[in-house]
Image 1: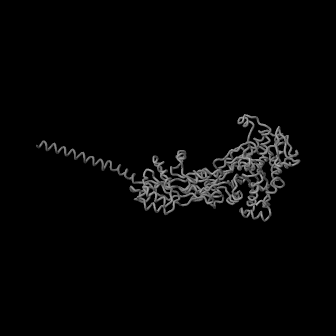
Image 2: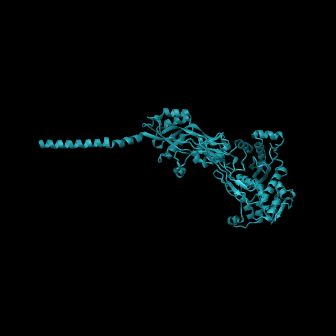
Image 3: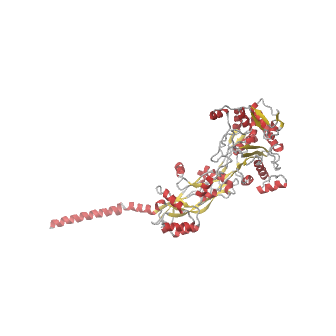
Length: 601
């Protein structure tokens, strides 16, 4: 019996020892691990969106793109479990697109990426969600910073807009400080300078119960850092003047400072309101804009390359004046047409211009003169080389995305592309800016800058300064860069300048460019598009003609329904009046009417 009692005691002791040891293991050894795991389960870490840098106009006094406080609603796919009745009440009361929310949550169930399901929601929606938190697991709200664009469509092609980062963008930029919930520039300055504007995300943590309700105050782990502010070269008064002068006409306006390459104004129409991308309608808004046949996302100032028409005659004149066998005083008789090879090439004026030399032909935009002189004295290589020195046929490198190259044809290109030889008819077409030649308004403005500066042009740019958001101190100045030096004698440019002045004084632009606020030199152009009924109205100019002080270069391109609408020089006249009298659009129109020089409005 004693033996049995001893055996039982030993078994009881061993069992007690095992259980005690296991309890010690669970409570002491594993206790710290379970405590940490419990903390991780109940502890939430939320990113703190940084304050995006502001974008200013050139005087650093007016904000073109800024920020305001707003509320967004987020869904956590893994925790999302809401009964249909509550969703229906939520949709009816607060106008949220519940089907879209469910679709987003379902599509991201696997990767569990937090989804924004409500943008810029009113406070009453946030209060409702706070009251019904128990019925809405997986939904929460957060106060965020919303991007705002005070000038709407007028600045849309310059500024662009911001949106949620896509998975593809994140894969490219994950090592640059971006998170899956980051906002990123999608176009314009917002895209090009996103790394400066975006700032650095912060993080805060708090403990929450199973319903997601906060049990502790927020504890900031890492404070967010605001992005840099950017000061653009844009003159807001000129931008508004150009925008209103163009009006609701498809086209573009570019105003440059030829002395440093600063873009003072850049307008493209149709445009879009970038504020739509900060609202709950952003997906619907993007779809509508993308399907718009007028292509409002297209920045026609840098992305639309079309035939330069008669504005290209200033390039041909520059090329002719470099040829030793050409005399600018040599004349021909324009009878309204000329036979070249087996084809008849027509002048824009069927009556003809009579006897003209280079200066007179440039002023009257005589096609026949340029046909005959180009065929007689120039090769496609001559034209290509001069155009290239004037920076045509290449991107200018402006700090905006999506710039078009434009195109200047060569005999080699035609042979490789069409397997055909270059004909004299191709030279004739090129001489009047038709055929294969294509330029953008910005490229044509840059080419005129070379002529106005007698041999050089600066790279067009929008960014003027980079500033610290908190202190306002300048962090970086944008140093102007030379884009091109033309190996062409100054005397050539002086002759072309005189011809461009003659266009205004006694040529094709005499009736329209009649502002007396400044002396202007420029060139008109009317080109036929691929559509039989479509025309492109061009006007390029620089002013003042002789004084380099406060000189600007202007390019206007307008799509016209007929060749007589000719709105480009008409719009330019109002812009020039406004710039040099420091007037608004309305004031400039009033001044021109008072002088009886605004017969077309």
